[in-house]
Picture 1 (spheres, one colour):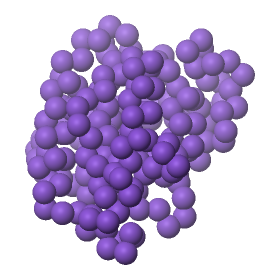
Picture 2 (tube, helix red, strand yellow):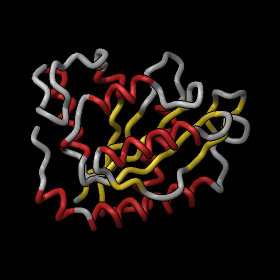
Picture 3 (cartoon, one colour):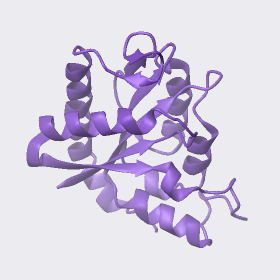
Picture 4 (cartoon, one colour):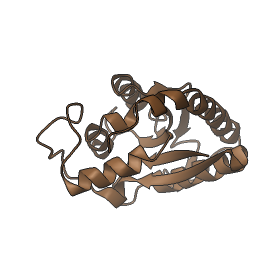
Length: 193
C-alpha cells in the first residue's frame, strides 16, 4: 500500500494548516479507500533548525540526528500533498528549510499542492513547483487553491465550499496514478536514509 505524506508547512502559532491538512486527509482517505495510507507530516513536530548541515544534501546524507529523523520520515513516504499558506508570495520558510535538508528522499516521488491564502497560495505553489523539478519529483496537476474569503469564516474558521471536495478527489486520483507509475523509479533509486 502506498504511503502518502500530507505535509503541514506552517509552524506559526494560530495556524490554519493543520485543520486544512486534516480535512485533506479525511477526504483523500475516504475517496481512495484501502489503496493508500494518508498520514500527516507536521513540520511543527520536527522543528528543524535553520539548515545546519555542513555538506549539501545532494552530496551526502545529513549527519545530525534531527536530519536523520527527518530523512527517515520523508524517505518512508511514496508521495506527498503539501498543504501550504502563502507569506509575501512565497511558501513559509519552515517548508523551504525542511525541503533543503534532503535530496535523495524526495526523488522519484509525485507531489501535489493544497494552498490557502487570499489568492489560494498560487504564487507560493509556483515556487514549490520549480523546486520539485530540481529534486526529481513529479509535480502533478492543478492545485487546490483555498481562498481565505470563500473557504474560511473571518479568515480563521476553515469551512471549505462543497465544490472543493471533487477538487481534492481529482488531486488524489492523479497523485495515486503517478505514485504507481513511478514505483520502479523509487525501487531503482531508493533514498539513502
